[in-house]
Length: 293
Image (tube, rainbow, N blue to C red; front, side, top):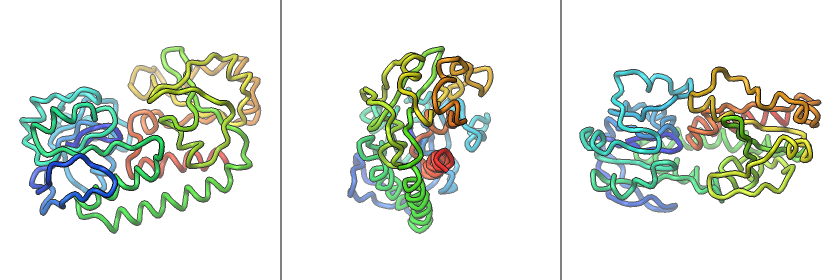
């Protein structure tokens, strides 16, 4: 069962031991990784890279790169947060991979088939992401391809970090239903500061996956040089368009970011739903690289 950035994957035909994934833990390779049951959106990119067709996928608003999984030929096995255990069981998986939003279902899913947790640690996102990605490379016998893709990510990260130091201070905000939440270093979107080196415009308070509720006055007073915006409404399919009218106001327009055309609308699905998948991380890093160019 696969899930992208936050989900579950179940592969048939694999010969895996039942373990919770940890850095350094050996996961026995499957002889013939087969069909998967995908209950998450994040690591589907890995699944695509492995060229395996899942037997089931979550009901979700998929980003363009994963749009085909919304087709009716893919059985729906729950939502991004709540797997349908009966549907998962019916898929008869040999391996279930959970992470992020579905990690809480580990115990129940492990009763159905061998299960590993590939959640990424926000405190050390890149190290954790690489370790988990390499595990998947072993499972699907794609070690060389994974190593090559990770090397590309490393190069883009290094190039971005070199430019970010002098590109000005950044602020990350999530907009949802008319509300604005800020995220800082160490948060779910902290890769911008912690890994890519964009200086923080404010000391944002965050707890777990939740940021700090802020006002437009806060954005004005913080006065970021770069304002990164993630539109949650678009990510979950409730927005009428990709535009973000919430930020179209005089307070935000008075910031350095607005004056210098540095309000960066990050891909909502990629950042909010998909997260740390092999292909998506490269896209995330590239977006930040473009913002500091």
